[in-house]
Image (cartoon, rainbow, N blue to C red; front, side, top):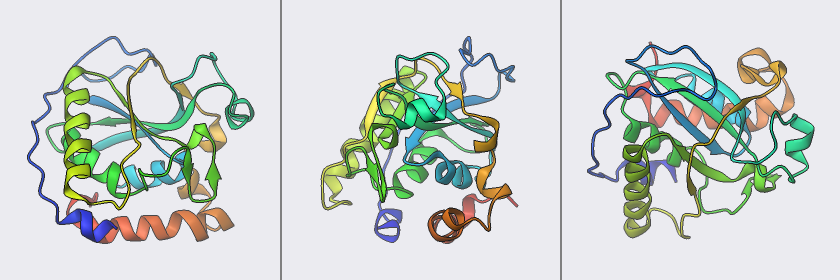
Length: 207
């Protein structure tokens, strides 16, 4: 799937950097931007985006629900409405939002509703929480073009919703793959995804 998608050429608008009051209360340089993606287990998503050139920081957490300050156990119950997500701080002078979208859609299956592999539930849904109208437009255009191209055998079910807040996950979830690479889940699930990502996106890797 990755190889097929990698050759699709999609012309999209470029995204300008933006500044806004950040609900996560992160002190951020005005030249940096935020992106918030959910694509299954946040351990996998975090491991991939940590390796992208131009990405300054990746934090695992929860977004899209109605429960304030949820715990991992609560999110796993599926009743909070939150998805497991990563919040990405990136430099748009180095990597654009549409390039991040390309990585997002090529490193998970966006056609499975509320599921990625063995991880099942609304907390594992494919979702983009946009921070600006520019991000919304880019995400909608990209999704439409991918569907029209036939890149996937089934329609894309990725949710595109406004960002309303981000709750950072517990400390043991942060930098998980880098700290627990020998754990079974890391070896059998995350490592193959990271290896495939490195091959397809070699030009976008950090030095």
